[in-house]
Amino acid sequence: MAEAERLARVRYVRESELAEALPGSDALFMWDFLSDALAAAWPSEGGPGWVHVASAGVDRLLFPALVDGDTVVTNSRGVFDEPIAEYVLGLVLAFAKDLHTTFRLQAERRWRHRETERITGARALVVGTGPIGRAIGRRLAAAGLAVTGAGRTARDADPDLGTVVPMERLDEALAEADYVVLAAPLTPQTRGMIDARALDRMRPSARLVNVGRGALVAEPDLVKVLRDGRIAGAALDVFEDEPLPPSSPFWEMPNVVVSPHMSGDVAGWRDELVRLFVDNLGRYASGRPLRNIVDKRLGYVGPHRRAGSDQRG
Image 1: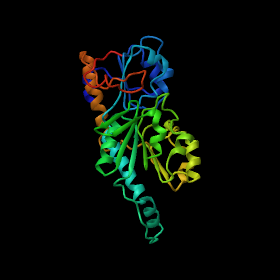
Image 2 (image 1 turned 180 degrees about the vertical axis):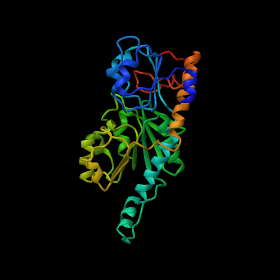
Image 3 (image 1 turned 90 degrees about the horizontal axis):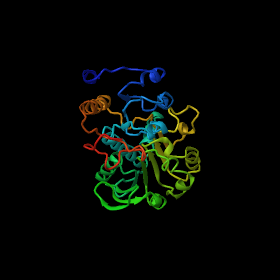
Image 4 (image 1 turned 45 degrees about the vertical axis):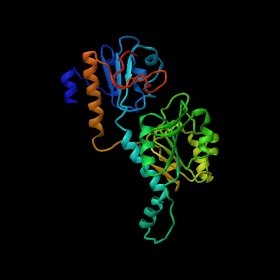
């Protein structure tokens, strides 16, 4: 943050100090993107004109006072795309090659020959057509999977996702996929989208991979489907409650991979987050357009809010 401190007077605060620090501040860098403290601390007047969050998702920031006000919100879009795509490919390979069983048998010193699956020609459905979903699509396609996307707008011949089906046809697309990868933002429309009905549409041999937000999935429904063997497995990097409680049944399921919200966190990721914020801070201080302006009504960076768009909310 040394460069940020050269551009502005920076104050570092904890959640308990946030309400006192916000009035009169020009900008807020929300480093703890999992915190819910901002809504309670937000002033009735005189709040920051700009809030930047150290994540791609902004669902915890979009409380009514912030959405309805003039404050501009930007996110860290672009930092996590390729690392998450690599992580998803790793999970797909781990499932296909049954690596979790190999590790378990090695720990037990048991020699048990098995056959595994090919990923070439397997069908992957990527739900979410933002930069992370696109990076996942490119990575899986390069590995030989047949990729389809699901998003707000249907289109053919998408350069990263092939055919993109509208969300209204998600059930149909689920029925065709060997791997369902969730990379959508959490909005009122996507919350709980993978529920019992959606899971029932999936193939018994299919796996679910969630690197978006935990609340995209109705977790009790997923637990039941996994216990009943109605899908082959799940890899979950995000959960509705984080950290995942020790009492969660996901921990003990042999067909589930649990990871602690780390799919995008590679060596140097904190430095990248700060570099993006500092670049935007320089833009904000000089009145230039901000990068990654979030459409607060949609809950993500809209197509007209990419780099180079103006900084009005």
